[in-house]
Image 1: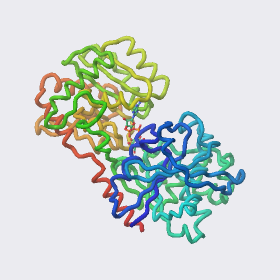
Image 2: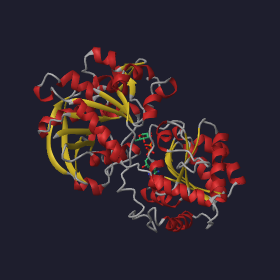
Image 3: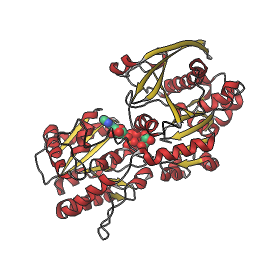
Image 4: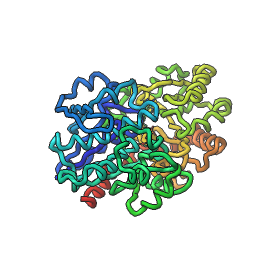
Length: 478
Ligand code: ADP
Ligand code: GLC
């Protein structure tokens, strides 16, 4: 039995702001139980919903040497769908109404988390074969392991994996101002941890981890180039011998149109006709005009530059004036995009609905009821929303980047293949052209559209395949 420890800043069902939580919550369930004992470490944020906090049981507490002083580390545990979770408690760091705050606070907070995870292991008597780190927040685990723990017998054989979910976020701050890194020797702080004169958690993790992977094959290539590298492309090329791409899956039990409690009508590929009912409910719930012939385009997303909202902003008016489409958008993020959609919601009250906020319920309503799902990302390491929408027979319209390119096969009207629509360049006109094309198929070739919906639902984007790839990587390492 190999012991795997996941360390991450968010994980479903306890705390989620995006796809990272989906991956951390689902992948452990799909690793073979007979071969892998997987446990997940998360911070015990005060903002974890009360219902989940109450399920946590106190395990132990101790004080560990930290640069500031000896600091309290509490450990709590909970089980979710058979997976063992540990929560690191310290309210000095993990208070507040969201997991992330200002970057200068976050770097210190997650440096603490990394140290606390390592310090907890002997207390729990759990010595993992592999620590699987996710994103910059856990990038210092391989560094602290190397700097402070290696000489202890307990830690000697532990290997580390670093998964890059988003290279844009690197955890960068002034070297001398991160309190919880102060006692690291200078050769770390001014060596591998440094990039462009700042501490860089992601770069440090990438250099010190035994294996590195990105969340799709295309993204693994893109981050080695200037455009996708976000300043670290040189580092990525340097580590290319230990770098791979493993595409994410989705949790098919959580996202199942046959059982989803949020859906008015359950359906599978054989009963796909029932999806119509969900469209009606979506329209009436969100105040959209009851119109079967309108193509409802859904968007569920963080509202940031990454997700391509500036393209939508450029052509939405024209789209509304020339096509019988309706738009149902759900998301939070940058003010400029929130305001833009609020305005359009006001301008086209029965054709555009903007829900600004975070809502699982509305998300499922949109995935289940929309005809198409728009994701024109500027870059997309993997993307889960397009996979979820396909599972619900909602046809994705995406830009060919990262995981979107790897998971959406463009429609081919000659061969009658494909499960979505895609465009290549980050350009609003190109996006509009492909939306028009999708609209034409939707209106004028309903049989083709219906067959594509089925191909979406039949495509297997579950974790089954990718979990085997992670298993292989773990076994190669130990
Ligand atoms: P990212 O992690 O970059 O935000 P992904 O496509 O990988 O993008 O994953 C996003 C996840 O977060 C999906 O499960 C999506 O449904 C969910 N999500 C995003 N925004 C919201 C929101 N406002 N309300 C509910 N769920 C959301
Ligand atoms: C990041 C990426 C997204 C990916 C998710 C899970 O948030 O932006 O593309 O699907 O992580 O790996």
